Each structure stands twice: as C-alpha cells, then as structure tokens.
Image (cartoon, rainbow, N blue to C red):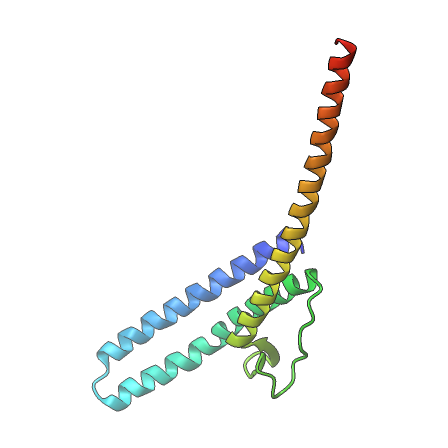
Length: 148
C-alpha cells in the first residue's frame, strides 16, 4: 500500500464527513422550521436518503482498508454472499461492504495475528540478545586471561 493511497483515502473520508455534516445541518434547520409531525418525518427521511450514499462510501473505504490489512497478514476471509453475517450489499454503491460484525471479527483476527507475530519477534530478539551477551562475556574473559 502506498502513502498516496492512504492520503487519498483520508481526504475522501474527510470530504464525505464534511458533506454529511452540511446535510445534517441543513436538515436540522428544516426540522426546526417544520410545523407538523409529517414535515418533521419528511425532513428525517430526506436526511437519511441524502446521507446514505456518503455513509456507505465511508464504510466501503473502511472495508477496503481492513481487507488490505487482513491480506497483509494472509488471513482467510469469508466470501461475500447474501446470507453472510460479515457482508452486506450496498444498494447505493452496488458492491459488498462489511457489516459491523464483519469489521469486528476481522479486526480481532488482525489483532490476534499481530500479537502472535510480536511474540515470535520478541522470542527471537531475546535469543539474539542472549547469544550476544554470552559472546561479550566470553570475549571479556578471554581478554582478561590474556592480560589486555
């Protein structure tokens, strides 16, 4: 993954969040000015449908990021199918995006794999430090024995 991809995604996320904020502000104004319950319900309905595309694009970006991280660790991820609890079909984007349970499961799998790799690295580092310390001790004894 390149830095430019990360930056582009961050900029996209920021733009989508700002757009949602503007839409929510406009809808709050229309909710405040609504006279009847039907007008308020129409304003809420309008807010939902106007922000849905941007919300789903944010979720799609988050899903892609998470899937890239999972692929870096070679984690097996279930295929996107209709009855899968990990995936849902985005009607706005015509693609599959992860559900909240899918995000949680994949994040937990990534954390577990990171911990496993970290423990393996710590074990190797401990072994290497032990060998280096032993070598240093032997070298100092040898130098002392030679009178250096």
